[in-house]
Image (cartoon, rainbow, N blue to C red):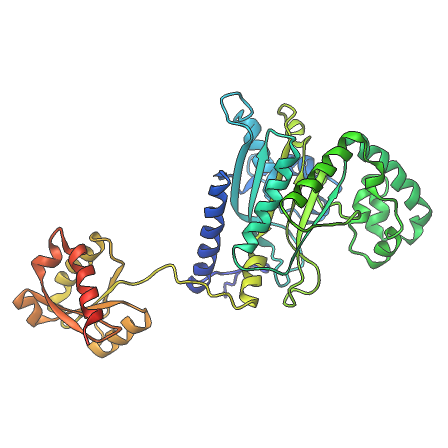
Length: 435
């Protein structure tokens, strides 16, 4: 039988994981500046958590979730997104208690799962890094979090971005808008797509988010949600816009943007790229405010705000821009071995080099010295230590700086001594400066 990866999944070999590690580490450094702390969560949860949190009428729950029953007949699902799991952990661990600093700021990263048609930048197992903030309705939280999202992309030199915002209002505003939208859409019932007909009375706001071209044409003339904001929601959105302008962050308002998850209220946003490798207006980051979700999952009333970035799309964006991903692993030393009799000493030597904090590798398969030097070159090793029977007898070994070809002889006792790391660095400098 021929085994292959499942459709919609990917293997990431070391050349790829180097890019991923670089991107993840750079994002995490910025998250720490904003005082976010990492939370790690299960990959599968109760099905009901996602059905309730994400929304039963959403495409994610109704069409895309990987759900199953385990041997205990529990209805489970692979996580399709990160927020619901973080909320569950927040409630279950009583992080809303007075002993926790507010707002609580968490970030997560890892694989998510949705049964979609696989295509470039959209896989069935995909990866996100996301943030969640709990405990404050201050519009400054909205703006700080959106600013963080923009700073992440700017940190990689990505400039062709748009910040698009909207407000869905609070519960009262949404109910008023919901009725107005149903009234507008009902005369077009027969023209709507099958999905939108089904959503019309369950969750009419999702019709605004339809990808069907007929639906998009109809909703062009739909009433604006901004016209139905009550005074509280209007003041919140005005404060968000004023703060963005204060920080000189350009933004656009899209009144038809509702996001694909049912838990949002008030401020929502997307970061959109016009990069030619993606086509026009591709969303690479999205999020918003959700002030009822913690309560729906069993906790006290707690405001929340967050976003998620698709890492596949970010890395594709960087690759399309010919981004120079630095190598994270630099091989300091490669030990060339000549003859079987040096095998044990080579093991001791390479372990000593690692003990001194060097990244080191050695020959294991007994190739000719010329092939071993080519390997050291291909691995971009800084130095090569050559160990043969003569070196073993003399208790001395040659250290060569590959960049210049210069070399020096070192005693075994020096390498095995406590001060070798300092001696190694001084020797590197000396060999590099020799004519």
